[in-house]
Length: 509
Image (cartoon, rainbow, N blue to C red):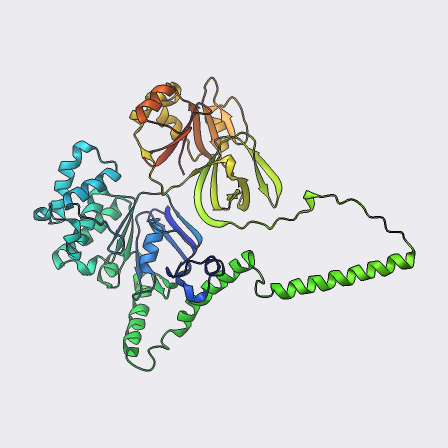
């Protein structure tokens, strides 16, 4: 392992609701009978060059972990961080439709930006490696599970994404292709890719995994090396199988069964307390308030008589500042955003904390109707949604190469883009020492005799580069751009063409 963490799942809980009950009340209160908890407080780290094995009995939540890592689904709470190209090879999340196998492969190649001129050769190579040459024109849905598994292995071998998730493939492979599968895992590891093996059978995991996580009833039961985890797991499986068909079957592992739902209930209660605290007792509370108000009025009446104070009615004055609005809660959401206006305020506990300039990259952790909750200075703070341009790492933005866009970029940047881009992630001190900026603002500095600005985050690291747009009309026409802020993916980075400011912003998340 190279020590670099590519994927983080931190205290992740995921539950689903019964599709038959979509009432607002049931969703708000998260009634136990309508909520199915899949994962509870799961934390997993995936390192570059690592093969992580995930094991567990059916229904333990293994496939849900794969979907969370690949961002097919989002967590109910907790954080999932993965900003790398990810391939989910799973029969629980697969391509469907009546397109032929070779057409489906071409669709995948297109999503991975393989040049069109290479499609025919790549498709042939993938089919041959998957041992499916004679099935090229067969509709994908008509392939056997084993054939689909072979295809998934071949696709990952030729595409080589940074993160690969193999979900329940090995048991569907014949012995010879299973050896080929092990070879692909070894080659991807040598290339520094991160691999997740989700399996019920242990032979491939035992041989290839560096590290393992055992899930039991949606919870991490044990993590460690295969030598540490597998003996405990096999003993557990033996005891489980011995309990089947006996009076002890329903009692087996009862504690973890109960914890699975109990942890979900704790979270639900936290949400209930936020959104609908004491709903059941609201009639009693209303009665109590009325009683106290009546007693207070009677007391005031007798005090006025005793003091012989003449009561003079006053005209009613509406003081809108006295209206207390219920604090609006946030829905968890992990994404990024770019500040659109200079001097955009960041607030902490309803007080101004700092103002940041346009181009500052912000990490979003939640949202409501008006604000984003952000992670700033290791604290939860807020910004107005109107101040930010939302960037979703899982969205399918237009994908282009630098050589397609550089003619529309400021020349001093495009001619030396590799040099400038190499400073992304460097500290403010390094920038000052090596680039001699014209200005020394905390969040944005201007390079001397240039129209290039460097942007810094709350950790004082350089996160973005902004510079003028060239030939705006040609740019709009060439890419049929209608919006005022055009988000485009360039390799593993992003760029925003902000036509309101006539400015590009290039950044990595």
